Image 1 (cartoon, chains in turn green, red, cyan, orange):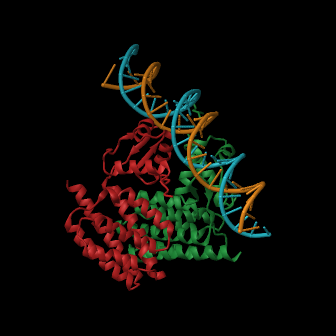
Image 2 (cartoon, each protein chain N blue to C red; image 1 turned 180 degrees about the vertical axis):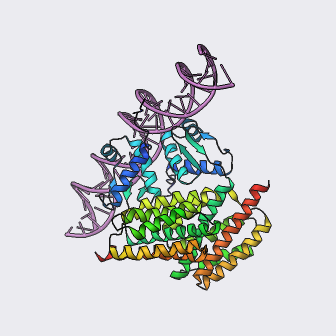
Image 3 (cartoon, rainbow over the protein chains, first blue to last red; image 1 turned 45 degrees about the vertical axis):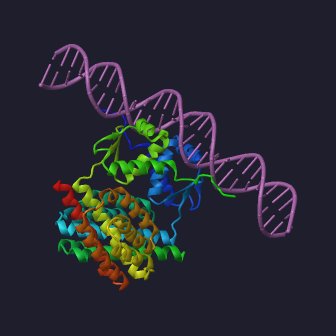
Length: 212
Length: 212
DNA sequence: TTCCGGCATAATGGATACAATCTTGATCAT
DNA sequence: ATGATCAAGATTGTATCCATTATGCCGGAA
């Protein structure tokens, strides 16, 4: 018989964290705002306990600050924030490249992503881009690295999607270059290329955020 | 008049997290154990609400796993765990060195630590070592990096203190070398030296953990 | 007017009690 | 021995309650 029982979803704290994350990075909730405990619980249709846990998660993700007796303050995307975020990503992702080279990991998934990125149009660029990076993290074999980078990605990178074609084209070329270096198992150069790739997109974001 | 009111300590959730962290990394609580909610709350002399938040914190630190409806499971210090931990530290700390060089940060605090490390005995090696690393993080100017590395340090490095003199001597020489490269503002070499330093201590830890 | 201090309100941090759901282990029949 | 049933215990989420603390307003003094 068909089992129609609803699948067990993520814990409520995770769902709440996801909802709030979405709202914060899309700036539906402006920076500086404080999130009242009961009000947000009511708004999400849940009780306060999982909301507290969600606040802890988001604070660890760098999206909130839990100030003493003053509640959860939404942190804005200041230039400093963006810079710090990308510097950390650069460090971790270049380490991932190094590990991939050193352990001679399988590259077929990564190659797949690169090929799609080159051939397909720009409409699903964002997903393919994420997929490319994610598969490198996976291939590094360091699961802790994967979770940390996933959290970072959710924390800010998701809210800072590149839309300009110009950037997408540059990115694509860099992806091909990185893949070639991974294939050559050149740990140093691959790590350096990834670092440059991420720091360049950091600069793109910074100009986009300051020029408006 | 003298103010004898007790200073406001950290939130209870942080204290609880610290206590449990200590217990886990010192292996007072063996790996695989599950931490019952009410029992731990009672053991810590607090209520369950902050304990839940502490569990979330420790799960993010990689010391616990929050399994669906099965509570908080203590994760052990397997070789894989240690390797992943140090690889991430290596990435972040070498990035810190790079940033210190690039921005030409003030090195006086770091120099101070090195001098003390060289001159003083081995009894307080651990604190001086931590202080050396911490001041590099600070000098990088990336506050997010500081918090992440602090959490990592609390998560595992604290529980894996080096005691052997042999290691301490090697470490000291490496610290001097790193400082010299920082002073020379040689970002590449300083980053590489820090990376090697941390990966070497990783290997020391791995042999210590597998040889017993 | 401007600045300072006290007071009242409101919200947080934490405690506690409780309902519902899930895991688990033991019992029992096949 | 194997497999299903079922009861006990734990977790997850809900609902309040209380003490402490931040904050804003108001009034008085310089």
